[in-house]
Image (tube, rainbow, N blue to C red; front, side, top):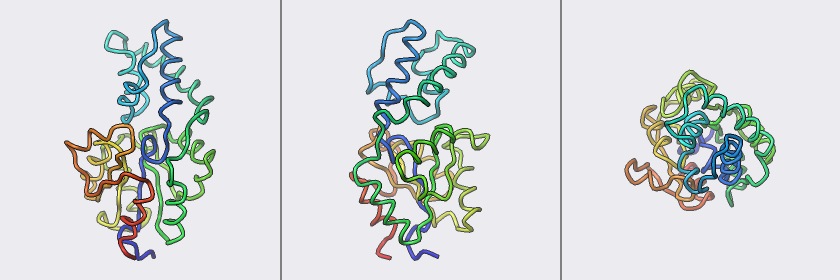
Amino acid sequence: MSTARFPLAIFDLDGTLIDSKLDLAHSVNATRAHLGLPPLNHELISKYVGNGAPVLLRRALGPEYSDEQVQAALRYFIAYYHEHRLDYTRLYPGMGQALEQLAARGVRLAVLTNKPVKISQAILDGLGVGRLFFRVYGGNSFEQKKPHPVGIETLLIETGLAAGSALMVGDSYVDVQTARNAGSACCGVNYGFQPETLRDYPPDFLIDRAEQVVEIVLGGA
């Protein structure tokens, strides 16, 4: 058993572990082009990320599109993104080393994202860090997505740990709310897609660089 302050570290994916902004933006704009629509600004698209692909497409297409049209666009988006998921996506600087350090100290590592689980695992494996996580849960792993606490609660059951032993690491208010709903601590990252949302939903910890998460998780252990 790890002697770390947080023996279970749970990471969001987009904007936290990986910088996937360009691949997501290109995939959204490819979908819009498929529908005969002009491209959106990449920064705007990144603000739409965090609540899962269906919400991302709904926001990117607007209210004039029916649910059926959004579902059809979603199928195109998923297929395109699967083919281009690692064109530009990379781990954030220092993240790979941080994960290795935590794993070496016996910290259980998991991913909890609203992105579909299959493509999430494929991205992590493609970037060489999939082996470090004992579990990867996505937006289709449970009936409810973040900020519902079912993901954290399931990971706590699987590890036999109490809620206070887990740290959720993420870049947006969704991750903070998820941790709060589960009774766990939360670490926000300032380098992600939606750091401005952390002002209204302040996490317990806030970091500017990926490697800082090691000190927080270990806590002097």
